[in-house]
Image 1 (spheres, rainbow, N blue to C red):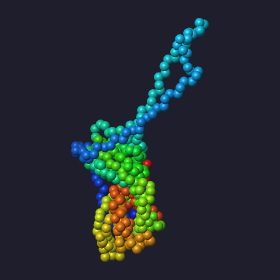
Image 2: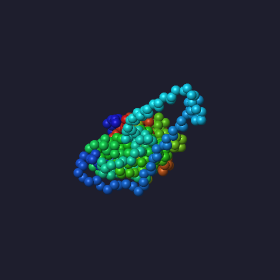
Image 3: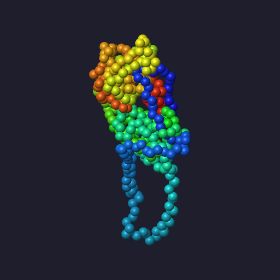
Image 4: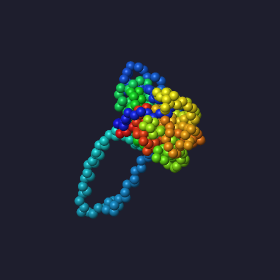
Length: 355
């Protein structure tokens, strides 16, 4: 798979970068260590049954094909019947590839993993039993570096109800991710079987926030229907702090948070420095980007961009966003003059081009 990436300075307004997870692998680079005990949650995977197959009934025989009644003898001068033709053996059928399982979408497999594990039990994000948003990727962290990535991928079975097409992509030798090509459908059930270690999670409503810099508004839709429109202010238009275009998703959130520009190298007492406590902070990337309450910019919200890169809302609107948006819910920024969000910070999943 191919990734679209460019080197850009992160538009930030607060705290430092969160680290991505680590993880394992005979797919292993070092096969001599014994695997550890599985770390499997207490909720069993929800099986995804393939759809039933219905065969149509055979067509009725044509009138010319009807057999003569059994009690009518043949004419006396009839020639003896021709010997029956020898049966013809059916043509051999091509073997079905292991990955082409009925009911599975591209990149998925409903067949359980069998055989010896090829890596030690990994950890999963989302965790077993989680409820997540439609933009949440599957993150698998291995205990040791993986030397044979194709072998590891073959040992990982992703399935869902309904089936959803997607693909793997590697961020490090100890972490592989899988996401759908498009957002998960609302209320999808997802099962993971990673070389025998299993986990499941659920997708909730399709809750999407779209921020348009031409109108300075955030429009929230739930399952395709508009639910709320809120004025916002984004990164100021100074060539440094513009908010980047792209698809973000909720990583974590805090009821209040101290934001300090010195954490990314800007002194507090400089022109663009700050240290301030903000309410209802929702992290959307690992480069300092948040959606948060900003009472000081309420007069600018809906009119102009004045932040250091974050999405500013009024305290009341920020509280609503905090209460409704959770892990994996997407935030789409468009029409900003800040270019594309392609910073490889561990949260740029939707900027990858998957094949």
